[in-house]
Length: 133
Image (cartoon, rainbow, N blue to C red; front, side):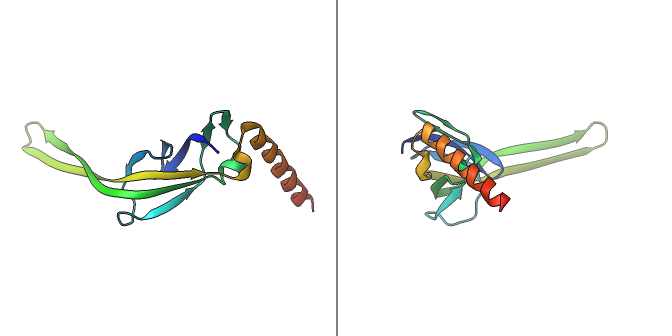
């Protein structure tokens, strides 16, 4: 199953990920070297098509590991009011985490776009049958 890339949400922001890429996100808790998995994706792109079915995307699993914790560049905020003697200089450095995407895995039906559509139809039929009973 050759997934070219996937769109996932990490920390409230969407990122394009593929296997082997490094990704800079807002600080995540965890030690360096820790491996974790993200469930679900907003979009999966393969060589033979795009998969957007929510039932299949919920089964996509992205395995990533924490490479290191970093701080961003310093941002200076300067407040000033003329003729009042009011000046404030404040600095801020955003904390980031560098992730490495190790693997993107999906369900069996994620093989081709046509297979994915068939699996999606079957899962919808099963849900309707369960709802009726």
